[in-house]
Length: 477
Image 1 (tube, rainbow, N blue to C red):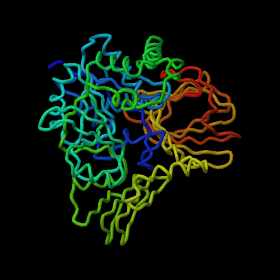
Image 2: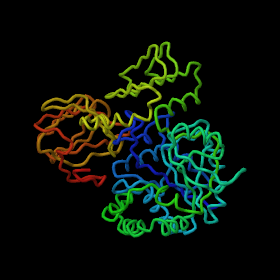
Image 3: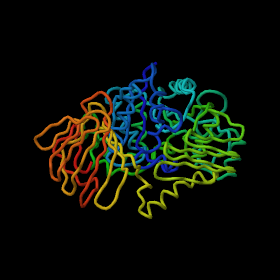
Image 4: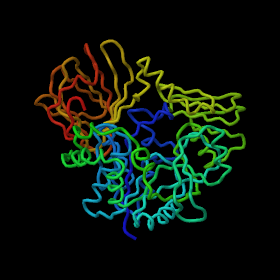
């Protein structure tokens, strides 16, 4: 079988799994189910003898997270494509098709979101193989999941045929109300729309030419003018920003007449809410009273609840709760009835309206060299914990409004302050005066941890002037 190019879409910023999923670090990069992140599990599922190296589409904020998580999973990317702005799935899929077509017009692509849970990778691979024949014959193959409940949070696919194997698609159905969902479940010829597609590169390009021609010229221009950015492919912003913001379903699939559906009857979830996380966790480890509680949580006389704390310093205790979900991080706690899982996004909107940073940002800020988090913040001072990966380096920079004092608590730092370079080891410290050009590096083989104390009239992250940066970032990046 010809190798399939997997296309992982990793640019989304879902809000229904807040506070663990936020705009600055969405759910695909979090270990929601097990030790691996959803993105890593998706990349591993689309690797092996049937697949070539993955093509990943993401945005500038997540590019280093994508690269790091693939490296941790031992998967080398064929390309990591940076979208200048969010334009939904249609243009991203066309970019992937054009990139594959440049090498092999009849090359097969499997497009999949990077935040789904599919525990049985072998069953999924068998379903993909069922779709190879129709896809090779100029069909666009979509994958539908056999429903086990009248779910209102998913779109549906209506089958036009019966029996095993790929079937023609009659129509797409938008997310239904409860009554319609129950009716479709009873009929038996409706599947959940998994949003996974298999097709030949030239087939998809022809579909855009027929049904959404307005995409072709801007996407081609964005690719033609794309630039290499230290190993990432950065699409050109001008033509890209002119594109419509539409999903592939609206732009192409609902208009196309060459669609086929492969039924997938094993476990699948898009983890579209905390109720889905609760349901999946119970399938992994059944509980007599329906309690899902992590190591930082304790349930007393509870039934059908989810208790989760992502902070070792914050213990969650539930007493006498039924059908409730409690999810805590170091800076936010969600408490909701499980039936209101789809309304969590409204909480994010309410927090945004009040200007609360918890709506979009985590206390821990991931950077290409490691991460930092704020431990204390007040007028004219801020205390941070900074972790620098082995061999990594921050940019050579200066600040206009603040000075800094660095105390190494683990590992060794190589510190540049103006023309002086100093090795600072555990329990040693160094002072960085206001305006001094400075850089911090980790020359060791283990992560370096330090405490940074900032003092000054303004402590924002935009008070930075970069002179040199191995990650090619600007002062605003």
